[in-house]
Every structure is written in structure tokens, then in C-alpha cells.
Length: 333
Image 1: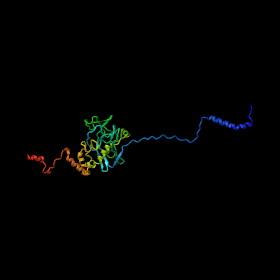
Image 2: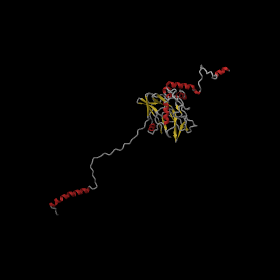
Image 3: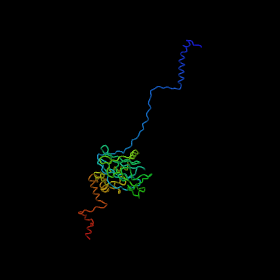
Image 4: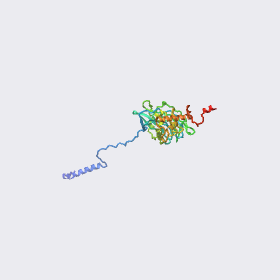
């Protein structure tokens, strides 16, 4: 066997390294090795979850609102209107009554959740009412006429028409034809408390259905409703300190219709038209503040009590040219 000479081995030595490199390169064909610093994977994008919308807090007061007045519900004037109960609102002059009224909803399928006063953090805060597909939490306040503290039993939507429950709402069947009769069982203590929480307040908490309703899309009060509130705020006869908690205009057939024939007063209050006569003066010369307004309302109320003129005073002198009184005629016969 032939052996390469030493000189040949020396000359081939450099080629051996090349052969080894070539062999290694052949074996690593198709493999890519990358060296670097490891980078952590980016976290998934955060998903925004909107909080459950709470009833808007409009105003705060340091004293509890007065008890709810007792009054009758005017009949529904137009088919499709929904009843919105009256409540006590707050102004710098004190609490004033916003009369209950029938109002057109913003669109088909919406129901009214009344506003309510709640005692939170040492103050009374008013949570504004709103329109929505379902009736939400309104403090457990028993406003009556279907608003017994939970939900609404005064009517329901049937397709694009609103049906009225005659057992709890005042409807004239000659005007409103879509009605039904359903007995309402009221499990809430019937009282006139107008606020939730605090000393003497209602202790109701939101139900599961009311919490779900709070997460739905809401619609604010309509322009007619806002104008109704503004008109109430400008009427001194509706201030609790002037009417003793018994407003002369407790409910109206339509928004802002304070002087309408269908307007009703609270039990024990002067007739609505009497208070209107004392307050309404577009020239600004009528009685409008404090005791003066109350005195004027009382005088106007006496002038039309029970729809009859007052009897003449016993010692009142008669005008010389006036016809003889009835008792004088009798004496002359």
C-alpha cells in the first residue's frame, strides 16, 4: 500500500480544512441559526367595557322632599300618550311640585322611568328620569297610577300601539280604544314617602331586572317635558312653602297645560284655576310671591268655590241702581 510522502501531506494539509468546512456546510444546508435577544409577545388589546349607566344626578338638597300629594289622574287626552307622575323638584327657593302629566314618548317602544330622590353621602340627590325599552329603578317610590315602586303596570306596548290598563289608569274609551283590564297586586307599603334612603326613607334596592334596564340605551326627557318643568319652576304657587305640600296644580292632561280645564289639584288644595288667576299676569302686575300669592289664590278660590259665585255679605251695601235682591223682592210681595 502506497503512503503519501511527508511533503505531500504538508501540501494537502490546507486542503483538509477546506474539505471539513465544505462537509460541515453540506450537513447544515437548509438550517438557519439566528442569535439575538428574546422579545416577549405583545399582550392582547384591551377590551373596553362600558360601565352600567346610572341615573343622572341633576341636583342635591340638604333637606328631604315633602310627602307626595294625593290627587286624581286626568283622563288620557290622546291615544299613545304615556303617564309621567308628578314629583318634587328643587330650586334655590326650595322644593316645588312638577305636576304629573300625559306626554308623547320620543318613539314607539319606549317607557318612562320616573326620577327619584335618594339619600347618599349626607345629602339628598335627585336622579333624573329617562325613557328606555324597560322601566328601571326609581327608588321604590310609590307614585301611583301604575308606578307602584317597581316597574310599570299602567300599560304596555303591543306592536306599534300602546295598550292601557284600565284598572290603574284613567282612560276614556271614546278616545282611547286599545285597553285591557289586569289586576295589579301592590306588594309595596302604600305611603306618601317621596325619597329613598335616609331617615324615614324607602329602603328598596334595585332588582336584577332593574339593573339590566340600567344598562340599556336611554333617551332623555323630551323638550315638552323640559318645558313643563321650567314652567313649574317659575310658578310660585307650586312652591311647597307656599302651598303647604298640596299644590293647586297637581296633574295636567298635557305638558305645560296648567290652566287647562282638565288640570287637577291635590286634595285639600285650592282649585287649579284659582291659583292660575292669582299667578298669571303677563304684564307682571299680578300677585306672584309668598303670602301675597297665597292670599290672592284664596280670594280667587272663594270667588268660584264649587263653580258657584259666593253669597253676598250680610251687611254689604247695594248699588243704588242695582236691581232689588231676592229677599227684597219677597218682602215687597
